[in-house]
Length: 207
Image (cartoon, rainbow, N blue to C red):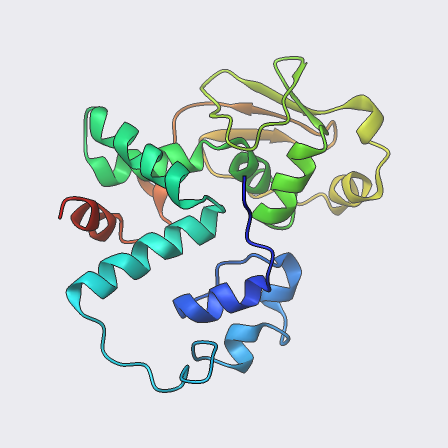
């Protein structure tokens, strides 16, 4: 599958908000959004007022880039959200939150979603005792997540363990000392509090 390989800081500037794609850099004074708070490109500082369609499109692009999902895959998530009972926008965010790479990021096992995706692809984690190296894998309540034994000595995981910091959403439980976690429930309510106006995405696809 094709992946975006250019500067991810351009994506944040294009959407006009921090997508936290560079980990700790996003919290420092080196953040591109803080230093150049306008869209990239020759005409970036001359942005026109967006139409209703433009607002809807930007919100969809923001969601795609925040979770690192390509267009066709994002459309499939939306179609699945439509088939499910309940509010389509909330269903969509719930599906995106359940992605394995996002869960690794939420657990604090990675500094950003792109880093989490890379760690998953490199096979550092197991779910219920079996290696899973598919970033788009959707976790479910009861799933037990763990860093593989041979990966625990890696500097990145040693640093995470020694930090002693793990602020995770209520639908996840994390044992930082043993680098293990469990999916307690489906993400609901405040767990879906991300900077995305999901109803605009629904309106876009409903045109």
